[in-house]
Length: 153
Image (cartoon, rainbow, N blue to C red; front, side, top):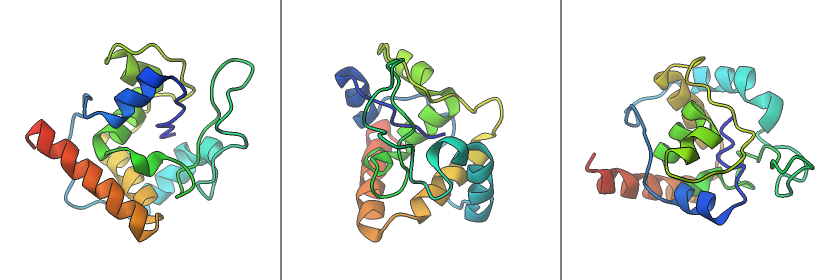
């Protein structure tokens, strides 16, 4: 899950750094990190690893052209993206989230919007964020605040 970041193409990378998205619910004031961890283990760990380590060689596309699931710990780039991007990519899936922005990209990230509520997705994101060192949390929080400001939230 949250393969925010099965990305290889320049257009896809540009979108992920942008503020565009369909985020249907703003970042909640409080999140249930314990529930997020449980949901992560159920929905995300099979691809992204029990310890958020991602799949081997996650930066190199496989024979099908799809990148393996990246890590969600500080060694990956999940923390480089604002909350809204993480939410949209998780809810819609990589290909659909990017297609809304006019970017065609084969992503291995499925959408979980039909399996998880918005609150559950936010709880998973909060759990992942809770594992990052302070430096990564601070950088990511600033990017999320910038995104919210640009969107007028």
